[in-house]
Length: 100
Image 1 (cartoon, helix red, strand yellow):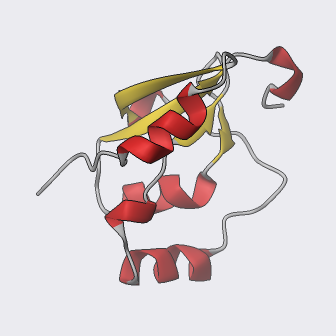
Image 2: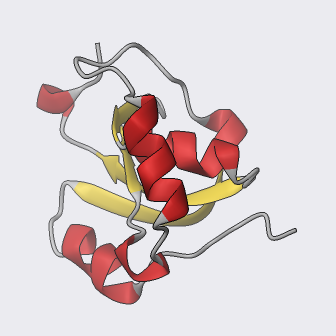
């Protein structure tokens, strides 16, 4: 079983063009801190993403500098269901958008 699905270059470039992001490839999922986000994870959305998985639409999840999840809870839930061990991440370096 595959433990990592890399994101396409254009998704990484989308984040990398800004100085307030650092893109890391093959980041260990177990290091991601999951705090309750404003939006709950909708299991129907996760199921849809699993059954209609498209590797071209697979984009990095966003973390703050402490590796707390900022955006991508559904993608991370899909990664969990797929038993992935690694995902690509975009680290948000700007403290104004820190996960709380």
